[in-house]
Length: 255
Image 1 (tube, rainbow, N blue to C red):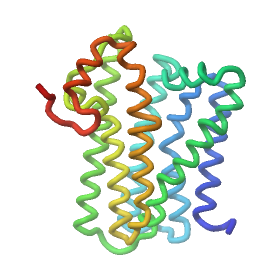
Image 2 (image 1 turned 60 degrees about the horizontal axis):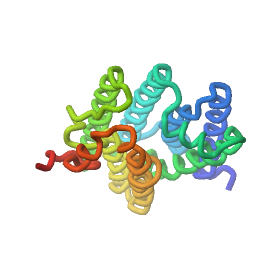
Image 3 (image 1 turned 30 degrees about the vertical axis):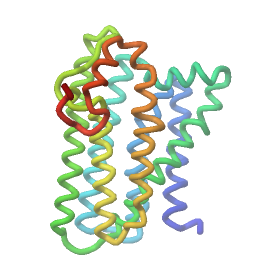
Image 4 (image 1 turned 90 degrees about the vertical axis):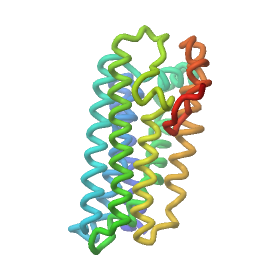
């Protein structure tokens, strides 16, 4: 059992979470969690690939693309934190949890994130052990992944550019944000579902709970719902913007 890939992947995710927690205490910034988050998938992929190393073609491609995505996201969060400090979501959690936040954040934020990262990466247990050549269905899934990556990267860039001149009350209504209130999250879900698609092609349809968990988390737990709860009170024009703009899937604004 101790050598089972699932156990090893979970152990690695837990270790990364503890390291992230220690860094957050030193920096007094719980937003560090977002720097480490994408590496949970990369480390899990390496664990799943170890028994069939070197990995096959689709496994190599998947490992490279999720590594690139992890580097981009981590760098973006580090630059943003250096400019604006702790992410508002974590500051609100810190305020709500009161004294002892540092200790409470280990299970409540970091270990929870480690478990969610482990579950979200389970489709990689199938993808990283696939053999054989690249199929047309693989190309379609990789195209979906690339589309999601570009959408997320462009949306993050547009938001960062807007934030530099924002006083905290403005609403970004241009670029991808004209068609979706959360295009960055839409891009992330495209990537998550495409990795599941690669697993499905390899017989991993049973891992569908992983992208479903990601979808639920983004819509109801850590993403859209949490961010939109306080938006109208901080940004007066947000209610009008939300009334004509799709919440997630990019779509032309309603009249």
